Image (cartoon, rainbow, N blue to C red; front, top):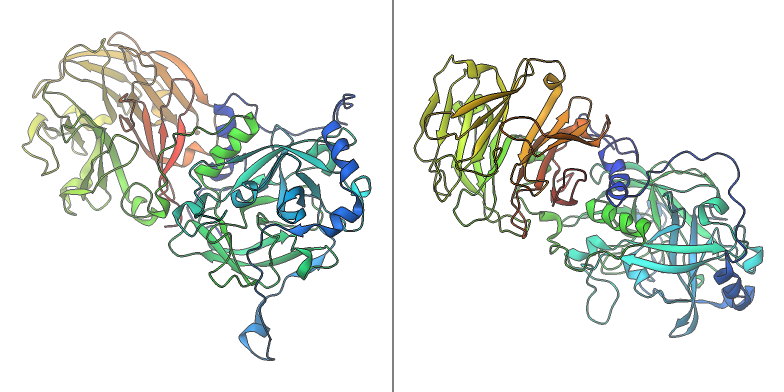
Length: 611
C-alpha cells in the first residue's frame, strides 16, 4: 500500500523498482527491454546439462523425493467451528503458475530431495531464479529448477522442461545459526538468494521457455492490502504435488525488515516462495516484493503453517541481484549488517524532516561526519565511524525558529584548522561561518555577509578543492538566475577570489540539488547535479577557471526526482570524499559508497523505509 508522497515502486519506473536496473547498469549491464519476435535458435550444446540431469530424474524419482527443508511442518491442529482458526485464511491448492516452480536434488541425507520454491525473475540475463538463502545454502551441483511442476510427469513431460542450477548467489553476511541453515538474528533479513540456470533440455532459456518473468520490486514499507504468495508444500502435506496460493494483507514483523502474513497451508517446501503484489494465474509478469524466508526460515518459533515471513527487498537484495545478473560473486568484505536500526538514528518518519545535510570532519578525527538541519530548526551532528556507519548522534541546537531560515549550507576547512567549519546562507541574505563547530556545539559565529546582501539570491552552495587542492577550501555557488560562481581561498571573513563559471542561463536554474566531491580522485574536485527532471550529471575536474567535463550518470527519470537532499563526503575506509548520501521523499536515506564521475557507488541503506 502506498501513501501520498511515496515514490513509486515499479521496476524501471521509480526508485524502489528501478534500483535493480541501476545496480545492473553500474556493473555495465544493459537494462531490461521489451522483446519482440522469436528467440534465437539454440546452439547444439545448449541445455546439455539439463539433458544429462533428465536421464536421472525420472517421474518416479521426482514423486519419491523427500523434503530437505524440514522447518514449518507443524499443522494448525483441530479447528472448532466459529473459532479464530476457522476464520483464518487458508491457502488454495491449484495446478501452479508458469513463473513459480520447485527444486530437486539428489545429494540430501535421505537420497533425492524436493526442495523449496523458486520463481523466475525478469532480467537481461534471462536465466535468474529467486529463492531463499537458507534454501540456496543446501543446493549442490546437480540441482534442478522445475517451473509449474507436475507430479507424476518426467522431465520431458514437465510443461517448460527442467533447468540445471549453475551457480547460486547469497549475501555473505547471511549467517545461519550453528547446525542450521536458518537464523533468528538480524541477518535473517538477508534470507534472499538468486540462482543462475542453464537452458532446459530443449536448449531454451528460462525466460523464453516460460514466456516472461517477475519484476524485482522494492516495496514502500511493509503494509500491503493484497499480496499473493505461491509455493510448493512438501508431499507430506501435499500428496498430489500441487502448488498453494493465498492472497492476504501483510504487516511488519516487529524488529525486522520483514513482512508477515497469516494464511494456513504453508508447510515445509514453501521457503523461497515469491510475494507478488499483482498476481494473476499463469500470468507472464508481475511484481515481487519479497520471498518467503527470514526469521526462523520464514515462520514463527512454533513452526505453525499459518504464520509466514518474508524479507522486504531493499538495497542488499537489489545489489545481490546485480551480482547474479553479472555472474559475479558478491564481495566478501561488505560492511557489517546492522539490521532494521540501519546506521542513522531514527526511522524514515523522522528523516522525512531532514531539510538540509552537509558533511565535514567536525570532530577532528579525520573521518567524515554528517550534519543535519531539520524542518523544525533542530541541528544534529552524526559522527562517522569511517566504515560507512555513524556513532551516537549529538544535538547542537534544539528545535528553534532561527535555523528554519537556513537556506543552504556546506562544510569545509575554511580556516585551515584541524576541523571543518560550517558555512550557512540564510533566507535574508546573511552568510555566517561557524569555524569551531564540534560535538559539543556550534561554537562562535563569524558574519561573512550582512542581511539584505546579494547572497539572498544564492540557491545552493558546496565546498571543495577547485584549484588543485591548494590552501583553504573553495566554494561553488549556484544563483537564482542560473549563474555559477566559484570562490577560491575562502577564509574567516573574506570570500576570496570570485570567478564566474556560467553566466545567467536557463539550464542551471533547473539544478534542483548539487554537491561537490572527489569522485574522480583528482586534485580538482567534481560537481554532482540532480536536475528537476531527474537527470543526474557530474562535472569532472571543476576548477577555478571552468566547470569540468559533463558526464551524464542518468538521463531524465522519475527515480531521482524523488531525491530531496544530498551531500558527498568521506564516510568509508578509503578516506576519499566520494561517498554520496541521499535522503529520499519517503525518508529512506542511502549511501552510495565510492561514487565515481561516471558511476554511482554501491548502495547501502542508512535509514530503512517504512520505519
